[in-house]
Image (cartoon, rainbow, N blue to C red; front, side):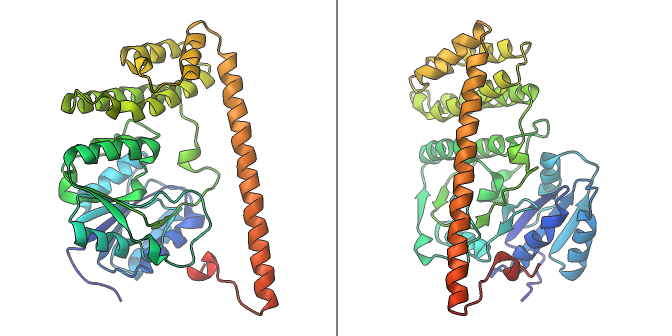
Length: 363
């Protein structure tokens, strides 16, 4: 059933750039939503593959999908253009190479109807196989009704993973807030942290509504540049200042920020940009982050080594961490293959047919 309405409940914003192999599955996941009052605004960021042709075909097939084309300007600019055209009461985000589960919008809607929250965040999906069905045990949620509760929860949550596709937000709450177009990575983290100051109430759902496709070339897997890191550090400093202005007695509220700042420092050190690294260290010291008890001793020693020009211990530590992380990824993939192989073998033995995401999305 297609809902014909000029005022949809959800506006789903999809930035599109070079995602033709996965775009059909993404858009079909919207067509399969059990909740039908939505519009999709897909912004083609001057893709050089068949993405624009795929979008045009879906627009002709379903009037709820609208397409905007722009010269290549990045994901933030694409999302901002779509925000200016959105008509829905709530805004959701989806990447062009991922999928919403069929129950996603219904899950958001049910929680919104119960709480009337400004912001509703789903559980972070991690990296898992496609879920075949909804788990009725995951419908619980936590409702934050006090401003300080919202900020404390939000800082802990979004500093660890502030991806735009994890939440639905009331369009009137956004007001003039937009994504920072000058920042190329983690722009949605900065957007989410700025959004918290505008939210009166928020909800954390237990349910997973989004399937993140882990692939080569994905934006979240790109290594940042030192200049971008410096711009993000400036944004984090402004956010910390705003938080401390609101609650000067609660210094611990900015503790999650240390993780983000230290990540930027490590990335700058790994780039071996000797000209920029002193500026990053100066900003870390000036922000008072290093004085906080939540910064581990080993992190402080890394700063001291970098100040003396001894970057090789930092590089070796980061390479070791990367090697361990890569080993764990391979182990996880092997276990998944083994489990899938066992399931397939058992189902073939009993004459059952295995249902896959390809079957569900008719690819």
